[in-house]
Image 1 (cartoon, rainbow, N blue to C red):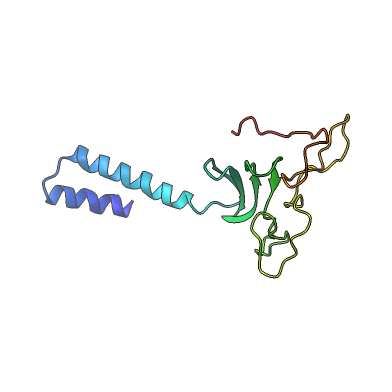
Image 2 (image 1 turned 180 degrees about the vertical axis):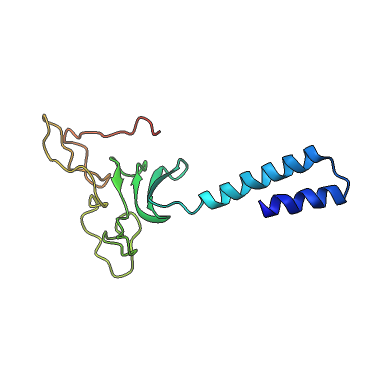
Length: 144
């Protein structure tokens, strides 16, 4: 309220129309609320369409991302981080790290991994494994 009073007096001193001062106060309030909203507490989801992922944040820190890349057959969660920022998933094959083993290209983080569901294989999650099996497909249809 003090800021609004000072702006009112400055507007009067500069001979600015009262309506313009009211509009200025309104937009400053809106902008300050937007800036304050950036400090989000709790969970939030941030869609990144170009990257084909939805980040899951807690208090602004990345916990995981729901990834639906073209290069990997099924959606998965990667990386998986603790609240303290410790990554508990390995990088390979998504973001390999130096000195890390490069086996099991279908181990991408957390994903639906049942081998046989009504005759469909939901274990295979990699283009490195041939498609001669009847692989199940998981697709994201929309995100709200």
